[in-house]
Length: 368
Image 1 (cartoon, helix red, strand yellow):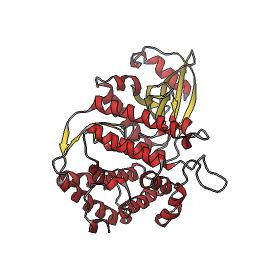
Image 2 (cartoon, helix red, strand yellow):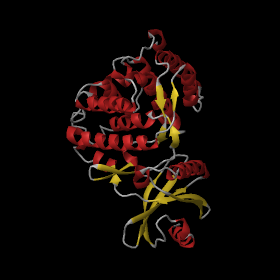
Image 3 (cartoon, one colour):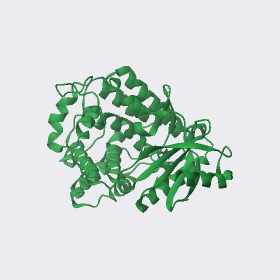
Image 4 (cartoon, one colour):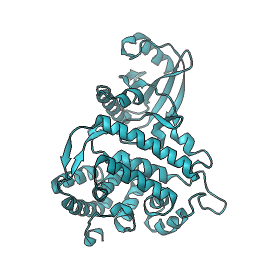
């Protein structure tokens, strides 16, 4: 496969944004296990610098996501945006290599934020975690600011369309009750927020630590745009980062007693939220959005600070946060993943003690 990629690039030097590249080697940077599985190769030039990233479908079911990502990157490449130009991959080609669909794009500098995240002790250090949140917030504000365009006025009709879109891929019977409850809540909360101007911007769609590259204390690149859009609502990326950050706090910081170092209150949610299921991410989510202490406060400041920057009231969380969770459930056609988000959404609809619902004005009967 590497030799075929080298041959393709040598035969099409006009596709390379910075001119011909002599590929000196390659490494496998990632392999997906799901139905839409892909292999990601990082190609290096003769100086040993990463030059090109190649995503190759392992199965035809991955073709659609590769085509989508190539389309999003192509649309973003046409934007007059400094942050897009410097920290978003530039598309090179969508082609068949060895009989498999491959998407080629420029490589970006830096290493994934997850390398910091999983360093022992990192996520129990308030200063280190604050640096991660600041980097993610700074990049996202620049990105949304430079790609912002258009808006829509919030009303019941718009909310109904968003609920329908969020649940359209979740047609299993187990989702019907949850969809009905989210529908009632979203419409009621949208009614109280009628006329609020919701801005549009470009969307990454999977804005979590593994897709953010860092050089020093700053984000130098955002990769994996298969869930992205050139224009959409600005909430998914805002919610995705703190949600994913809260999910995995227990992975490297477990003490011998079983609690999570630096996050003593998290263990209470392992017990309290176990009634909603055994998905490992439930406790971390609950702690991040329903807990107290320095980390839940960091999550709260991230979300409310971004809403203030967008010029939106905190009450919009009441409409868009449940829709975000439904969209996340539909992102992958993986039964365990969907069942976990279904349990999480059920918990969110029943648990009231969170700043997310401040001023949301949801009727009590819609939550029961």
